[in-house]
Image 1 (cartoon, rainbow, N blue to C red):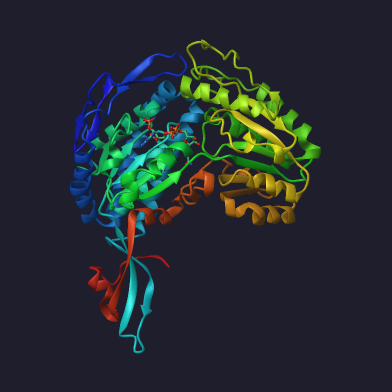
Image 2 (cartoon, rainbow, N blue to C red; image 1 turned 45 degrees about the vertical axis):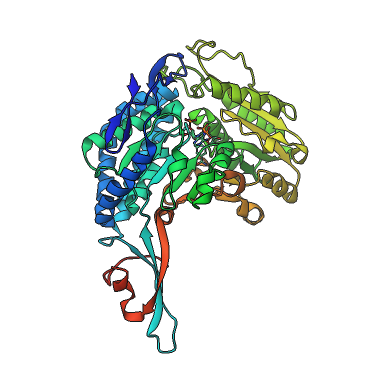
Length: 525
Ligand code: NAP
């Protein structure tokens, strides 16, 4: 079976033999994909001229309603998405839910908040600014939907959520989308797009999918388009530095890899509720989706006096966690996505071991439950320990994209802040402590280098949304190494798909000149 691409409003099979998609447990081939000879220049032009034009005829409320229908279609096909996640990603039920249910929730969220933007087709930003003594001459800022296409180049670990967290704000904004999922897990994204197309909810040209290598895609993006990338820092650099992107100043949003941390406060001793909740969260982050989450905890920063106790507590939980074929309902940790990722994890762990000791796991010959070691792509959950955080290099730099984390001891607040900052910019850090002074110092010390800070104390208990859980109402993205991009954060996400301009002119007619009725929603003040 070769999965066809959907471009210019029709399904087209790529040329050649294509690349295989495999089951990471059995190693069996599931399908093939090819983007060869697809003609992306024409696909983008069709999206801009047909999809964009049709979307911009609609109001925000109408587009929000469309998102609601997309969510309904996805909900109806949820079981099939779980089946594909199991086959192509080796996902357990919990892993598949994180991706698929997260995708549906995000779609529903934007369907809901989009309605509040009402019947307008463009947005005012802020109020009227007087520019003259009498106030007759004034200015108004506006946000208009870009007349280009949104190109999504996504990572393999979130084939459903990765599509929807970008598609929902883009479509709500009135911008057509072309999705290029990561090759390894393109099947699920393909199936979602197929379901949406079949349901006939979106106008022609509004949604396209290219499965396989990006090839010359970036040669054809224009100044009106938006490239939203999620993946590794190395690929991000290549995309940012692409000649056409640079020459035409194409807007690029990057969500890249990140060495996220979890911090245990000095007040949290073994036996306390906060200590247990910290250990539980670290293990959850290491094991959910076999650690293949951009937000996963990679560095576990603990006071030196608790170094051993935390290591023992995490190791105890890991030792009772079943790893293997996700078809077995007792299994909590499945494989990584393929042999290439497995080899990359082993290579990363070898480097980390140069400056850390193994507390748990780390066996490359580890035998998973009900899986053939030769054919499958498992990585044993592995906890390492690094006693001298500031002397270490790899701990702050090497992202093992699998079920692995490193414990790092800290000696003082200053030492902790210096260690955390060595991540050079992360998506998320979590702080577990009942000492408000300590938490405040940490937030002030590292907040500028983190997109999100999760604070857990006893008053929050187990009500927090989780270190690795990205909620659509809050910002997702981080500075520096994390890519410097910004996604979600409710309606703020729409900014990426709009262009800001200001009209200076007769004060009473500014909105009318921009083609708006007086009651247009105020979006951003
Ligand atoms: P990747 O190798 O960088 O690939 C990401 C995407 O870029 C894929 O669709 C890939 O296509 C495409 N690509 C590769 N080279 C390209 C080029 N020269 N031009 C245009 N597109 C190109 O990343 P991955 O291995 O799929 O994903 C894992 C990484 O993503 C991890 O490092 C993880 O931390 C990061 N991630 C970050 C976030 C976040 O929100 N910050 C979320 C999830 C994952 P092919 O697959 O066809 O090569």
